[in-house]
Length: 225
Image (cartoon, rainbow, N blue to C red; front, side, top):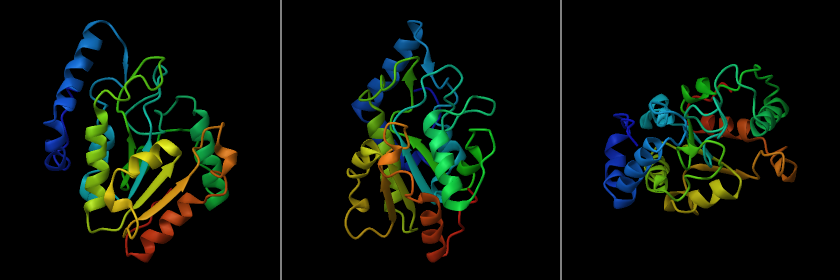
């Protein structure tokens, strides 16, 4: 894995990092890159979601599946791309729903760093991917680490919002008991914003206003989406 775990996350991730699964992941990634395989995002950006959103600051969790697999797209934040990179279709639809929900015209940039800086954890299930091969690093050991991240947020006393777009994110959340029946958190589930599924219930789901209404109700600062 090579990237250093941010201090705020280290205590809750230590048990996951000690598992054979996680140890194999590090060795496997090094082997892939040593063999000349291109892996996204590059080293130094793979834990960026955790770096920009310390555990104690998390208010909203948005779960993605894996990083974008095109050149220059992935930079460590789910659904986000660096400034100047063409906005991908799923993010286009996220911005459409944001406009319909809150009337916000997002800038042309697809960089969601400013969300992360407000306590929105933009976490993919797998934090790396082979160039041009979507889903290629699923089931390679990232689950143990990212499951631990989700569980750590869910176990806190602070009520938080979990936005689950698509069956993959919803299935991941089911592995966290604190997000089940009677949870103190707000769980917002809908179809994925992909063009293949957005019209099946993502559009009109109002995740942004619902998240902020919940945060205000519990005395937490709303997100400036």
